[in-house]
Length: 375
Image 1 (cartoon, rainbow, N blue to C red):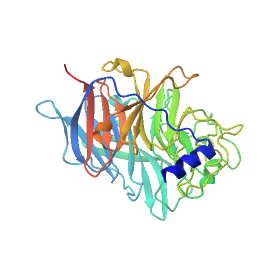
Image 2: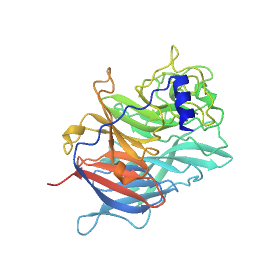
Image 3: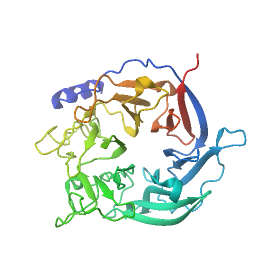
Image 4: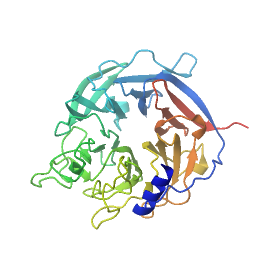
């Protein structure tokens, strides 16, 4: 089988992921919380608490105990809207409002509906103590789909206060990622109240859904805004995982162009590039199965500053991708981190304390904090 893969990679011109050097920055990994059911997303609140989503539909609080140490609250947050949890579907991202300290508002993304007719939904709510109040849907994808795969679900605030989020192609008719009458395989942009910004690239275009911000995505799983630049990554099939710089109205190619092949080892397309379609900043073949992503610019690890941190499920690692200015993109060799854990890493976050935080993807998932090793 290895020979077959190498042959196909050679035929299709697929570039293997560059070798990464051994890690050179000493660190220590602490377990902050454990026993979480496939934790998916981590968020920091200004009062020192943390929020964690569990794919099964629970929102959990990590808060300082009487001894000042962080601990997982035993009872989930009440008031979470009903979530469809089956296959890859469930509760995805939790994202605090930029003005959370004043308005107590968070945004959730999750699978909504029934297995035979489901959607990606984005909703806002107010967090009061350990309960969500005033839950309000902001977006529900169209049309309903019949499979519980390729939801996307990552979200980020843009500097202008609008919300960008990704949705996968549903793993059905993959060419829907190129069609403007469906949200499948797209990034969307909406206002904080769910309204459609007037300057969205397809607003007013006949037959196009106005929330669409970019097209041609397979299953986006990482999203970061750094210095006003929007970075996203997505899963390929067998290879062709991509890191992209998102631009409004741009087409990122799936499934017309890709660096991967299908799970059957057949070609998805003969094209890796075409005019009018954005090439990726980076491509990973063989697949690393990228999950969460963070921008690290903290003080605890000076050698990591100015890097994207990419969680990888299949590779069981975090890839550090050193970045230059937005026009030049990635620079230097990638570095593989935390492979000694031997665990699927679902999310990675840069904490306000300068530490790097990880979520492990398992029925007994953990919240981990990475700090410099002590002499």
